Length: 237
Ligand code: TMP
Ligand code: ASP
Image (cartoon, rainbow, N blue to C red; front, side, top):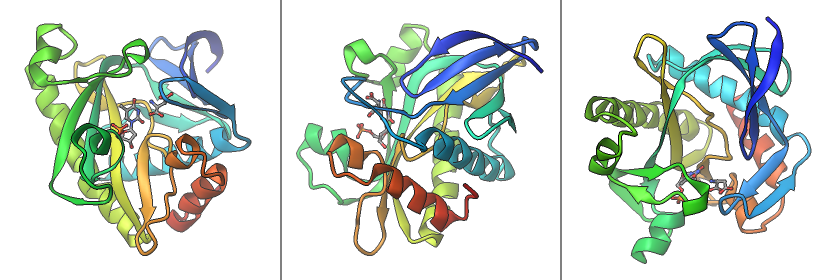
């Protein structure tokens, strides 16, 4: 397997083609961004932690029957993945109110949500990832109704698996974002990443924030918090 050219440079990862047209390489960089790329900083070790963390989580999800794009880890910061045709719609589940939900609805941060909520956002930094609904996604051809139904049910399944996993390690999974793609055989597969960059995690007792809100809110100790999450789960760094 040989690394070829840069296909796409995102805010935190770079995607490379390989000599296999069905395989890509994800390179997890130290770049940390917030507010749709307005605030960017390099955080030492972050790329390595997120790569290893993502592989650990994706392994758990595969074991629970969720198809992921992971093929194999190549290095501290690189993973070989199956090529997907990415759907530009982000799926968000929330177990507790935080972030944009609090800003949008004026509800109290930390309120437990029952049932857990499900939201869709269009992946578009220039438009600040606007919230959309299923009819927008179908009308504009971003996904079919069948694909959206599968994405929703897979996102809730991921929530069931990970809520328990984090709870067992003394953390609350407040909310998270997933991105899916279409594989060569037409099936819906979990892509992108699951890391503290794309979810909210609080300590169960103290509600200390252990995710990218530390960076967004300038709380400091960002990488230390990511490391703590990894250590609590037993991820080998
Ligand atoms: P929000 O509160 O900003 O809407 O975000 C909800 C969760 O989804 C939070 O864990 C952050 C994550 N998220 C991303 O990682 N990237 C995004 O572009 C969006 C919209 C959400
Ligand atoms: N979308 C990510 C965030 O919510 C990254 C960014 O906005 O630059 O922080």
